[in-house]
Length: 116
Image (cartoon, rainbow, N blue to C red):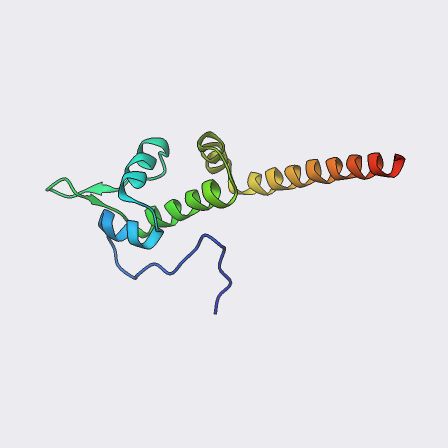
């Protein structure tokens, strides 16, 4: 079995998905998917001739990444937008910076406790 990131799940092997299918795959209500379309430019489902949304696998992968950022990593909408607009190699630096901040804060707390 391949190593998967926490926000990755098995997506059926097909070209296009209706909003109900994406809702079921992602575990998100349809109204959340529609809202996220207006908040994240990276989610752009096509429209069929009858006006139905038609999502690609790439759209679903992006939705799952956003869900992970918002629900598990506790990003704000604006924070998730900024993170997704950061080039991938810059994201590692972002994470490293956060970890360095946490480490420094923990050292400060440790020093305060040691003084008591």
